[in-house]
Amino acid sequence: MKDFYDVVNSRRTIRDFENAFVEDEVIERIISAGMKAPTNDHMRDWHFIVIKNKDTVAKLINKIPKQISDEEINAILRDWNLNDTCQQNAYKDAIPKQYQMFAEAACVIIPLLKQKTDILHPENLSHLNGYASIWCCIENMLLAITAEGYASALRIPLGDEGDWARKVLNFPKDYLMPCFIALGKASANASCVKQKEYSISERIHKDVW
Ligand SMILES: Cc1cc2nc3c(=O)[nH]c(=O)nc-3n(C[C@H](O)[C@H](O)[C@H](O)COP(=O)(O)O)c2cc1C
Image 1 (cartoon, helix red, strand yellow):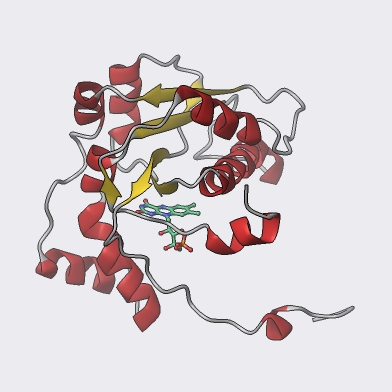
Image 2 (cartoon, helix red, strand yellow):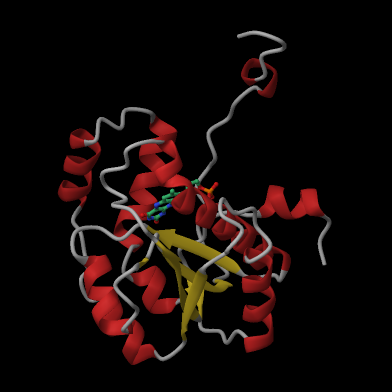
């Protein structure tokens, strides 16, 4: 097992996987790490659908575009006003791999949270607490995946991908899927985009900004 700071520093998003199998016990430890995350309401009403069956994965991801041209990628960068070179490089790596990263992963994990209010129309920040809590859970899982020697990538469901996932996986109406998680072994030539550099001393404001 790696030391905590080694894990934090080596966790990176990987979208290129080799053919591999992940034991159920490893997945259970990863999800147990997720379940230790802080939670707003003490309930941790979170569920996880672990999909290893390739036919189910193929059905689940069939709304994600399989191919995307360089022109389409450039149009997205323009539309989203992504002008920073480091950021552009990250998106240029990520956008064309959205389908492949799930198709090639050893398994796909769908975390689910019980969502009591309309997530798209929150009345105050507290109404987002459940969503914030599951992201704490997801980060614990990403760190555990790294500690276990595996790699991960994630995707936020776009358009009707969330509704489609509910149909394919049969999860209840009052559970919300915040993301898809790909879990697998990084391939030998897996790319890992450069993280944007920052100066930590410029980000810390002592006493006042
Ligand atoms: C809230 C959130 C949403 C993200 N959405 C996606 C996504 O839809 N597709 C994707 O490939 N990566 C997604 N990512 C991963 C980021 O692209 C990735 O973390 C970022 O490029 C930094 O790279 P690193 O994780 O290797 O440091 C998301 C990450 C977060 C935290």
